[in-house]
Image (cartoon, rainbow, N blue to C red):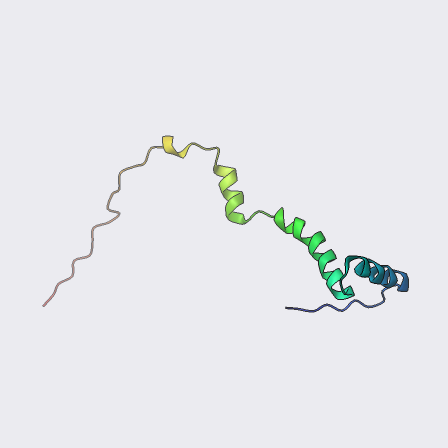
Length: 83
């Protein structure tokens, strides 16, 4: 777990936070954690991974209809003389 220090917070904001925490039956620290979680979590839920973005971009293509060429040997294998 990490910690965060907030400096230069207005006294009125601190008092409002104290009252809000008491109303919810939590400590001020827990109240701040809940507020941050409620604000940041929806933003994270909206994030899509790179793989999901690539998949959604090419999902409309019908790759099953593309011809697949037969495999060919790119070059002959080297001859290894064993004594």
